[in-house]
Length: 122
Image (cartoon, rainbow, N blue to C red):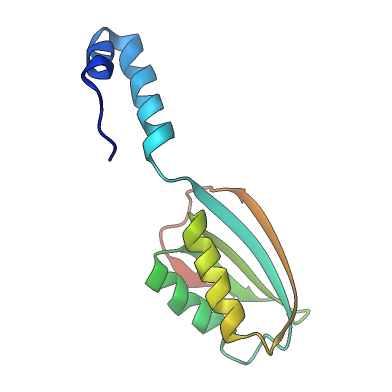
């Protein structure tokens, strides 16, 4: 956590309004930003261990969300974590399955914070 100046602490102690503004300021500047990615992978991505690798990798990196096979042959992934962790998650999946992935569609969103872990969806 970053160091907090004496002047800032005095300002926070100055009143209830300052406290809430101060907490908001601390949260905005010291907490890492959580993001959500929503990805679709196509190619030969079903039946090759993609979902289980995604789940293992997500749990190793402390990524929350889910992965599932779609009826059209694609795999859908929704994942939440800090952006650099999500980029690592994607990189590891794409390296492991580079010969199977033909196309990907990745969209970035604000995190919903509704996931506690990473699981397989059916």
